[in-house]
Image 1: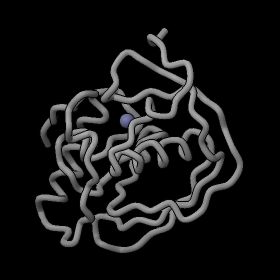
Image 2: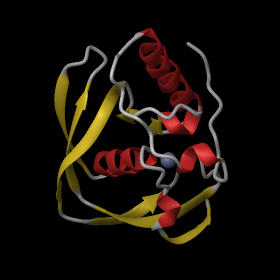
Image 3: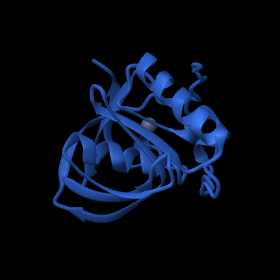
Image 4: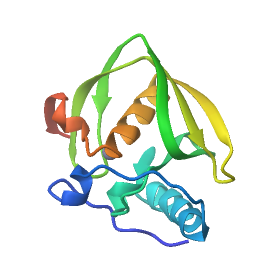
Length: 152
Ligand code: ZN
C-alpha cells in the first residue's frame, strides 16, 4: 500500500466529473487499498478518487473504525429526512461549515468483486455518502455550506 497525495481546493481535478469504472482490474484494487491507507493516515472518514487525482467513480468510507466501505460506481437511490451538521473535507484543510444533508440515504454500489450491493446510512454515514459521491461530480461541500470558517 502507498500513501497518495491529497489534492486541495483550487486543483482542477476536484472540479471534473469522474468516469464510471467499467473493469475492476488490479489498478482499481490497488487504488482502493491506497485510498484506505491515505484516508486513515489523514484521519478522515471518507475519500473519493478525484481527491487523489484519479477521475474514476471510486469512494472509500470508514465512519466506524475497522468498518471500511469500498464503493465502486456508487449511486444514491433514496433520501429521507434532513440534517444540518458541521462538515469538513480533506481537500479543504483547516475549515469547516454547516451543510444540509438527508438524514438517511440508500446507496447502491459495486464492491471490489463487482457485486452490486445496497448500503443504508444514517447521520454521519449518510453525510459521508453524500459528501463523497458529490466529489465524483466535481462538487465540494463548500459550494453549498453555510458559515464556512476556520476549524476550531
Ligand atoms: Zn471531501
